Image (tube, rainbow, N blue to C red; front, side, top):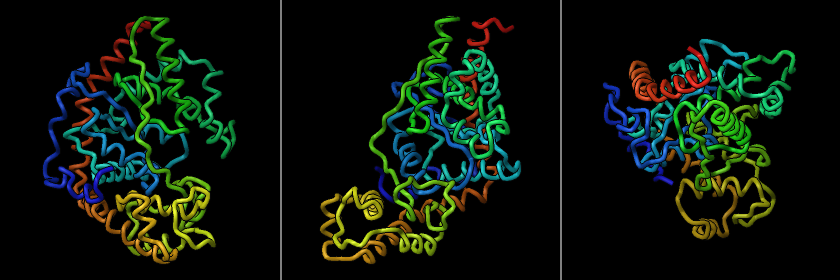
Length: 362
């Protein structure tokens, strides 16, 4: 894990006056000329990034930029599969881009673009739609989960076809790996299956992506209910810590976090609330479990919560400050996103043209 002040050392803190004009040379051509493996990751612009998102995904992205050739995208087209406010979607897209940059995504090393900026995503999705059976699509559990919130009859066709667009997102860029959580594992399997089927039926076209098993990331649980993962969708006031929470709010949420009636402060996975807090302390303090247990020997939950609150406030402060700085330069955000899109577009175009020609479209 990187040092807790790494966000403040982000190369992009030097100047916001000019967007980077170059990505690594291996993003300029269709083929990956680098020895680095290419990794593709995306996130929807819905809601703020919380501590669980950051530690479970975004921090891994930042830390992997020297190891992999990363392509990051903001999946705004996926966001319109559900009812939404157009103005809020536009605003949240720029806010998410600013937050990713503030967290340390460096567009001199990685690409960061908006899905809707590259027309080949929906174009390839249609070709894939025509090569995925209704049965396979209907087995996707995310459609069942999301459509159940209203009813399957009222759910959009776009929500049903969501996995085809996700497959297109991945296959366009000839990627080696895709980091996947348990909720997306099924979609990657579908992506691999449709790519292999297309290659068999029409000729070699798609590179088959593999799941990326990253180093064990933090699985941060809800502060008010440590039996469930920290989530944007949970409505409890003290459920999640968001990266933009004020110091006062962070301190208050940690103080109200669920613990238990035992006294000893030790890493015990059966004591869910305490274990959750200690895992956060372990990550941000970068101390071993043995050192942490010794530090809190004979002390109570009040001391742990006080120190953890202070630690989180100081660790997240550089991100909040950098985010505020970037958000004052909306033109810079647009420039960064457009520059990255221009660099990866040739890769997407080549893949789409190959699929189009193989399937007989003129």
